[in-house]
Structure formats: structure tokens, C-alpha cells
Length: 352
Image (tube, rainbow, N blue to C red; front, top):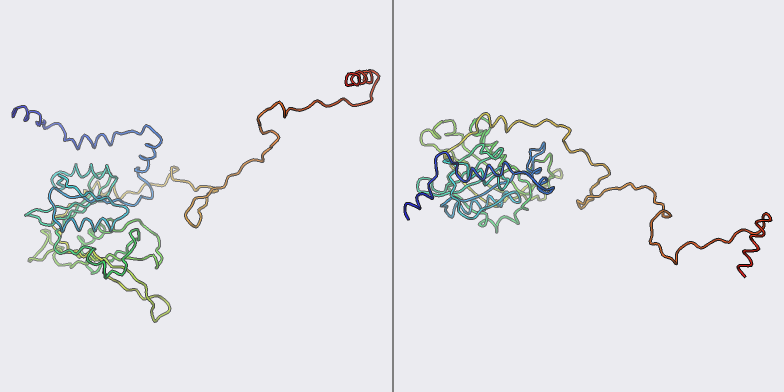
């Protein structure tokens, strides 16, 4: 029995793991129906990208601190987020193929993965994907964390889930240090949400602030002289109040959580060729969507269309033919020639 069991579980080195097979089957799938073609068309590259979806999952072992932080990140990213509450045997730094498969299956280009171990306690991995491949990753250690549930009483009502946040980066290190510049671009993609050209002041409901000290970021080993690379995340709700000046209202900020202090542990920067491909923008072509004619939108967001139809001729409309509705015979005209008169007389005699 032991020999049979070892034979069944044995796999040759040339055979790829099951995740590779699933990934290959997803890539080679072809739609057989109109609904399937529309589904695949939504995942194709577009000139204007869809809002990025974030996938939040747990490793084989996680702590309560990590679980609360993943739940708060899910609340920050809703409705464009998916949260897996079960444990997954995934190790992003050793083998990223299972994580890439999960991101492709759920159509997620952002991911957050939480683990806990003796060597790396309260570990959080945030990353981005391009073309179903991991572009870059940041591994953080959670030093201090306060969940959003602890700020429910003093948040003053909080903010709506779909409100676009304002991202604020405090400190001159975000402009001068190369590592912080890369991290700022990463955080903008992760927390920025859907791009918008302009936002009304009344629609601004929350602010996410990041602060980092420039000490320790220039060293290649992650710190010099015992200094560590720490990033602090805070979220505030925005309340507009009356002010003495009539030009603009007074903006009051109330902390609504989460309050997190993160220490950078490991960084996987994007490969140059993959980054070049991800930064390339497709040229506008004839396949771009054209402006729909005779289509308008109502104030409630409904879609309305105008149809131009030809004038209807009701006399040519086919109806049900019944014997009682048939056309009756028309009597011949009186007078006329002799033959016609004889015929008329005969007709009259027949009528009498």
C-alpha cells in the first residue's frame, strides 16, 4: 500500500504542476456562444481601462491583525474587490503561479496576501499584475494597526463605499527619493480607484494620507544605522462646515480608520521588458467605440433612444379575412346603349 501511494503521488520533473495546466486551459479557451464572446471581450485590452479589481486572500497561517487589515482593505476597495476568507497554500515569493491563476480566474489586476510566521510575523504582500503575470510586489510588516471598527463612534458617519478617495503624500521624500517615487506610483495604482477628470467638492468624502521619513530609503540593504523604512497609512472622513470666509467652506477631517504602520521588508521590482510592455498605450484605431446617434441619457441615468419609422399605411395592413367582412357586389349603372339597356332589364327582371 505504501508503494502504491508513493507511485500515485509521484510526478516527473518535466510535468508542470496542476496550476500550469489550469492556466493553459484558461488561456486557450474559446467562446462558443454570444454571451461567452461578450464575456471575453470585457477582458480584452481597452483604450480606457476598467476599474482595477483587488483580490484579498490569506495564506496557510494568518493572525488576527492580518485578518482585520485584509477586511479593512476590502472595505476601502469596494465594490471593486474580492475577499477570500479561507486559507490558501500559496507562497508568492517562492512560486507565483498559483496566485497568478487566482488573479486571472477572478479578473483581478491587484492583490493583497496576508500571512503570519515566526520569522515574518503579521506579514502583508501587496502587488500588481499585468497580462495575468505579477508585475511587482511589496512585502510589509504590520507594526501597529487599528481597525475601522474602533473609529465608528468618532468618524461622524464615515463615507460612502463608492466615493473616490483623495490620496495625500506627506513629506518631501516622495519627490526626492527614487524608492519612494516608485512606492508612490504603486500606491496610486492600488488605492486610486477609477480615474476622474474632476471631482465636485461635495463629492469628496474621504482622504487617504501616506507619510514616510526619507531616512533609510537610499540604502540598498533596506536601512542604514538601524533605521527602518516605515510607511504610515491614515484615512479621514471629510466634513464641510461653515467658515468665516464666503469663498470656500471649512474642511474638517475626522479619522475613520484604518490606522496602520507598515515596515517594508522585501521588494520585487518589475522586469524592464514587462514594465515597458505595461506602460505602452495602444493607438486609437477604427475599432474604437463610435458615438451612438439618437441616444440620450435621462437625469436618473436611464438610456433613451429615438427611432425613425416610415409613415404607416393602414389600408395595406393585413387583417383576418372573414366572410362577413367581404366586399359586397355593386349594382350596374342605369342607362347606356341598347344592349346595355336589355341587359339592365334582364337584370331588373331577375331582381324582381
